[in-house]
Each structure stands twice: as structure tokens, then as C-alpha cells.
Length: 561
Image 1 (cartoon, rainbow, N blue to C red):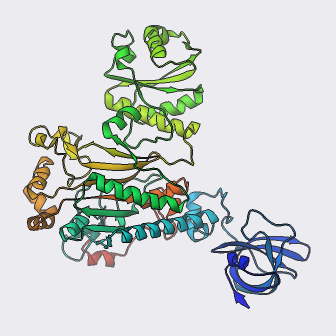
Image 2 (image 1 turned 30 degrees about the vertical axis):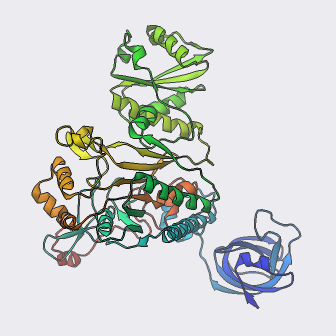
Image 3 (image 1 turned 90 degrees about the vertical axis):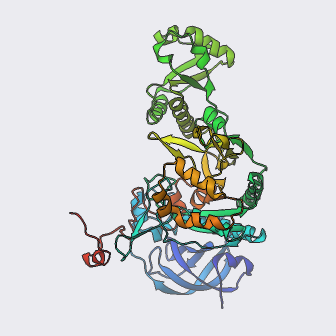
């Protein structure tokens, strides 16, 4: 008698005796005979029971039977040519009535599935997602080991430092002292470069207390990388080779080197810094064509349009318009062009000359033109959001295509609420060409920063780091950090800069987002074993939860009522 996994029955001959362990996925009865779809981690096999059965779906069995060929094979199953005639079986565990069916086309509410996540993970799609995650991380680890990287774990209890999102704070029994959960291992991985390890990677847990969305969780996983004595080209080449490895896991061959696009070009042409290049729909510049317009609507700093090569219904236009309003647009104009002609309504007659020039310039015959006129930032942001939403509605992009692009030439700083802030983070090195503007015109300084974008998602963000303590202190000063703040938040880091720092750079990839894209899932919650829901709550374990006053007393914390 041989114990095997379901898929291993393919290695056996007819009439072999086989022992299997697994779950009852489905039961179909025909008179006295019961046909059971039997599931284990490797897939399904059909069992035939000749006698009356007394178990329910999702019960756990040990079965022993004889392998036979099926008269009517199931071509949708790898084991579909075979079945097991059960001679003996043992019920190892009976399942009660299920809160939902274990199947991929499941309509249960998300919180119901998350409440019983251990059942949701039995679905083949969910199981496949976690295996894909495992295989991609295994492939990545093998790649890094082959290329001389060391894997080092950095602390999860660390210091609270300003990194763009709220920290999760961890109270301690030391008066008024808190740890913070890391938003990234940024300072530690730079310290490893100062320590001389030269090539580091880590599959790191990171934590950010920020608003939820479909591709965001309060705790997430980064594939974190840092290298010494490199420039951008060195790092890009290494990461493109890594991605060649990763894509082999999903059976896709990619072309490299990847396209490179400046931040300003991406914003001007696509309205965002993570453009989906699988479809060619750009923001078209028409400001100059309206410089003498008589229309109040178009008397604005910046006017751009999208040329959609098909008619858009009023319902679809409403959805696109609402998307633009959510991105600060005050008005969106839709104009249909048929056989190079437009309807002569009141607005179109006012801008008749401009529309004819646009039709001629862009050779428009049958299209819907979508205009936004506002300040430059609002125009590109709102039209960029329409571009993204239009793809969701009209499915312009080929779902089986993967388009990578490096977004480079970022500004070092940006204005946030009237204050200068780092565009990436405070440890990003300025470019040689623009470092001269640091003292008097810091907003002109460009960064040695880069993002890798895939199909409209930011996969990773990175930069060449500052390795000069004088320059690092100057950046802190421009960001208006006081001497006391620098000492309290970064003192240990600045201290390390006194003892020889190699030039270095790095990057970090969002593992959950990568698996979401490659598994064609709709949310990163589908690729994390035990995620939080849309409100950041673990509905399975009912956490966060109330703790006792005795526990709070240890940390000298009192709750306000």
C-alpha cells in the first residue's frame, strides 16, 4: 500500500493500490454510487464509493483504493484520465455546514471570506496565488545568492523617523519611550553598506499607518536591495536581470533594457508618474490653439485633451467626469467628432475655429475629445485619472502583456502645504548637474532617483544615496530639521558617516503588488495569506482589540473615555 499525493497517481499503473489523504471537495450521487472530487495540495482526483457514505463536503479522509482509467475523461484536470475505486476509507475529521462554497467563482462578501480565511485559502485560485508568491521569492533568493548578495534581517522594533506616512508606535515600559515598526529598512540597509557588506537583500516586513486601498495594506512585504560602488546603470542592469528571472516563473520572456522615461515627460504625456504603456493614449497639448479664444472656459493656464477613437456614451462620460472631479478638476468638456465634423452647439460654435485647427492638426475623423482647462497640475492630474479610468471601462490594455519602464530624473524636492519636502526621501543624492542650486534654488535640484513601473503600477522605488555627511546635513537643513531633530531622529546614522561611507544605492520592490499583477488578481488581499480588510481590520482574529487595564498599566498608559 502506497501513500501518494493526488498528482502522483499519474506515475502508477492501472489496478495499483493507492492510499490518499485530503479533503472532500464535491459529492455527486447516482443511486448507491457516490462520485467524490477529492482535493489535496497538488490538485483533484475522482473517487468512486460503491457503498453509502456518511461524510460532508470539506471533511478530511484517508482513502485506500484501486487506480482505474475513466470511461469519460475530464480534460480539465491533470488526473482526469483516472479515478480511484475506494475499498476502505477513514474519516479523519467531519466538516460542519460551510459559510460559503469552496470555489473560485465565489460571490460571498469579502468580510465573510476574511472571517473564515482558512476556508477561503482552500480555493484553487488562492492556493495558486500563494504558491506563485513562494516560487517568485524562491527564484529571487536564488538570483541574489548567485550574484554575491547577503541576506540580512533588520529590526522590526526600531526608531520613529519621518518617512512620509504615520508610524505604528510600540509602547515600552520605559517612561515615555516608544519603538516604531519600520516603514522600510532604509537606515539599516545603508548602515550595512557602511559596514562593508556591499551587496545586501532582504524579504522585509514593513508597516505604514495609512488609508487602505486595493493595493495597500498596513503591513506588507518588501524585496529590499542595496549595493555599494554602483551607479544607476549598474543597478538597472542587475534589477532587469532579476526581473528576467521572475518572469520566467510565470512563463513570460521579457525584453531588456527597459524603456527609460523622465518624470516630467511621464507627467506631461500621461498625467501620472506610473503610466500604463500597454495602450497609446496620451495627453495632447492644445493650450496655444486657445490663446485667443473667446470662451471663458478655455481661458486658462493649461489646456490638454485626450483623443478617444470611439464614441463615449453619456453614462460613460459621467463616470469619467466624476473621476476627474475627484482629482480636482472643475469642468470636463466632451466633444464628439464624426467624419471630421462636430455638433454645432453653443460652446462648440464659440470655439469653432479652435476645434477645426485641432481636427486638422491631429487628423481626427471619428473620436471623442475630452478637454480639461485649469492650472497645469490640475489639468494633467485630472486628465491622467480619466486615462486610467477609461482603460478600466474600455479595456484598452492587453492583459497578457507586460510593459516595464524606469521613471527617472525626479525632482529632489517638492512643496507640500507651503513647505519644502523630499520627493523620495532625505537620503537621495542630487544630480551632479543640479547640485549647484541647493543653497539658493533647491526646487531646481534633480534627484538620482528612479521608480520601476509595470502596467500602471509602481513596482519599486529607489535612489543613489548620499554618502557625504556634510551634504546629508545640508539636506536636513533645507528640510528645516533642527539640530535637535537631526540628533534625536538620525544621530546614530550621522555618527556612522564619520567612519568611511562607500557610494551606494538601492531599491525596494513591493512583493504583494508584484504577485497581485502577475497572478492577475484584483487586490493585494488575494495574495497575502492573512490580510486586513478595507478598513485595516483583521476580521478573523477580531483585531485590533481591547486590552486590559492591567496591561496598559505596565506601559503607564491611560485610555480616554
